[in-house]
Length: 132
Ligand SMILES: [Cu+2]
Image 1 (spheres, helix red, strand yellow):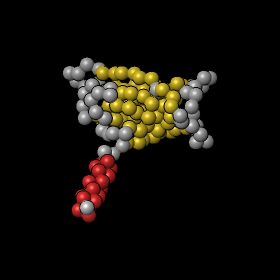
Image 2 (cartoon, helix red, strand yellow):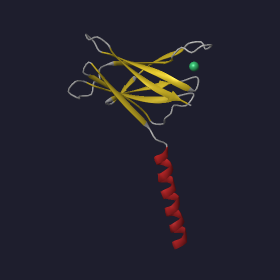
Image 3 (tube, protein in one colour):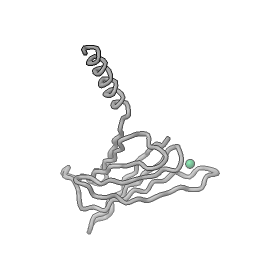
Image 4 (cartoon, protein in one colour):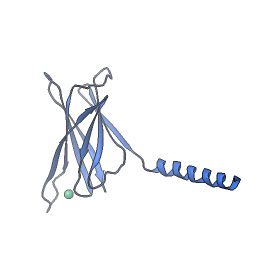
């Protein structure tokens, strides 16, 4: 019985280590007082569906929940490659917005996040994202 328990501990410990290896990613930018934080649970992004979480904070650090958030994912022009660009809308979820992006090839992408609020000039934040 002790042996089984010991083995179980090893399995649990290995599981914790493995979980720690699939590291997430978080980056943020402040544009004219508005902070846009972008995070991905798994990074680099994979080809196909990836969920991004976008948090928007006003100048006092309070979450902005009434914005229209969209993400334009594009690959900077490359010789011999047709331009690739996709836009997706964020969905408000609690204090943040979730958005699904779908890079079609491995490499360096740019994600331009637009935060639009009624009666205010839209805020644009540009992030670099890698896909593999
Ligand atoms: Cu390309």
